[in-house]
Length: 434
Image (cartoon, rainbow, N blue to C red; front, side, top):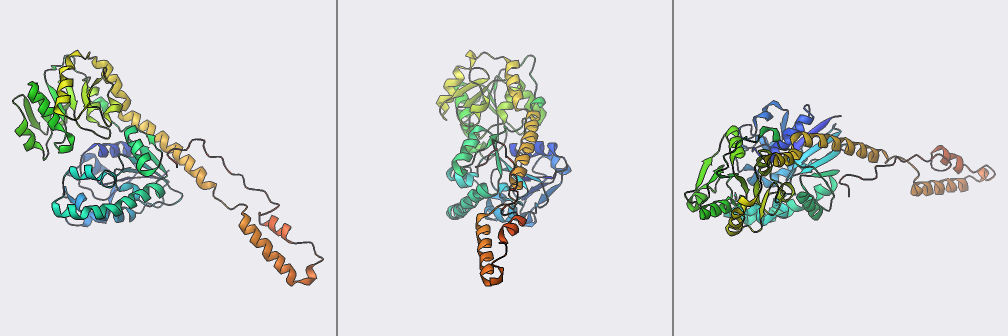
C-alpha cells in the first residue's frame, strides 16, 4: 500500500506538525507533500523525512513568518500542482489548503481536519489574530470570497473521508461542508510527562504563544487582582501589553526548554487555559503530569477536562469569571494518578492505533465502491442498440424469415440474456461519506 501525507505548510512548530510526525511514524516510507518547508522553524525530526514542496518554496521570502498570509491566493494553485498519482491512499493534514490536492479515482483521500479554514468560515476571528496591514485588509474580503468557494468545492469533491480532531470540529465540518466525519483526537506525548512525588503546588501556570486570541490577559488580570503567583511560559507579540497589565505576582519566563516546561507542569498548583481552542494539547499535557486544569467552558476543553475531577471551568471570557473560579480552586480534591489516567486516552499510541485501523477500513470501503462501477446492463444503451438492429432488419428484406438476431447479439454483449454482474455489497456504515 503506497501512502502519501500532505500538510498545509511546515513553517512552524505546533500541534498540527506533531500530528504529521505521528502520522509519519505509522508509515515511515511515506513522503510528505507541503507548500513550503522551513527546517529551522519547525521540528528537527522533519529533516530525516522525505519532504516535497510546491513551487512556492522557490519564491522570495518563502521562509518568512508572514509568507503564508501574503501568499494566500496562491495556495490553491500550489496544492493542485502536486503530483499524487500512483498512491493508494493520500492522508491530508489540513486546516486550510492541503485537502485541495487532486487525486485519481482509484486513490482514497482521507482528510484529517484540524478545523475548516478559518479565513473562509470564521473570517472575523481570523482577522483578529493579526498579521495583515490596513491595505491588505481592504482587498482580503474579495480574495476570501473566492477561496471560500474553492474550499467548499474541495470538501465536496476531493475528499473521500473526513477525520475530525474533536467533536467540536466535527460539528463545524457538518455545518460548513455538509459532510459527516469520524472523530480522532490528536496525539499527545503523554509519556514525556510524569507525576511529581511531592509537587510544590505553589504557583499557577500558563504555557502558550502570547497572541491576543489566546486570552492570556484573563489569567494575568485574575492572578494580579487576587495576588496569586502566576508563571507565564511563552513569547509572542502580546508580551508588551501583558507586562503592562501584570502585577508583581506574575512572572514572564519566555521560551523554555522542554525539560523545564515538563518540570513546571509537574509542580504547578493548576494549569490555566483561558482561551478557546479547537482541541488544546497543553491541558492534556498538564493532566499527564497529574495537575488539574482551569479552563474556559468552550471549545476542545469541554472534551478533555472533566469538571470536578480533572479540573474546573469558568463560564465567561472575563477576568472576573476566572477569578471567581480560582477562589474555588482549594475546594477541588486533586488525585494526580486519576488525572494522569484520564490523560492516557489521548496518548500518541492510541492515536496511531486508531489511525491505522481507520485508514485500512476506509481504503477497503473505497475499493469496494470503486470496483462496483463497471460495465453492466444499461437500459439506454440497450434501447439504442435494439432500435439500430430493427432498422437494419428493415433494410434487409431477405432477413425477414431469419431468427431475430438481437437476443443472441445482446446476450453476447451481456446486455440481455446474459449474466448480470454481481455488485459487491459495501459496508453498512461508511465513514464520513455524504
